[in-house]
Length: 209
Image 1 (cartoon, rainbow, N blue to C red):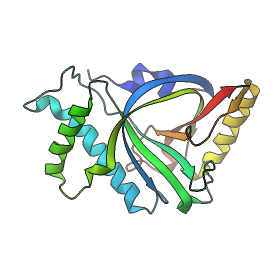
Image 2: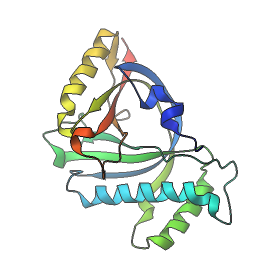
Image 3: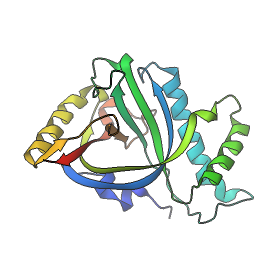
């Protein structure tokens, strides 16, 4: 059976209620950009790059050079860090002003060498994609609060308000800043899921009062 991060780390990917989690260091492939994700060509390109590289890594088991420490895995969900161009937290009425980092988690065997080899292999299949936009980065999110939102992305403010209320009632402060962002984890492939069935983990960094 392929290792599935969502099933093995349910506390991070499947919150049943609002909860506090301490998110450890993880490896991600990331692409930065700006603009409305519904209309921005750069966002669609970022998603194509992220999924393409991630599935190339997964299928490297069938290649001539299997990465050291390789194990079969289910490609983790797409994630996104979001903020506004002026540095403030996400405002869903100003999508054209969004800045974002789109990213997909990678197994720890994905080193910088594996990443570069993956880009070289994927570029042969998609020579028109600018893979220099992608980077491999280790990211430590730390102490956070999170909640599961079901439904359209446009309806997220209601869940965000519930999350912020939970944070305050639990004795924490929201800690969104230039280094710690509003974070969304898309448990369904957003390219293939009806809006009303979409499941999104909304995660906010927190600090102790």
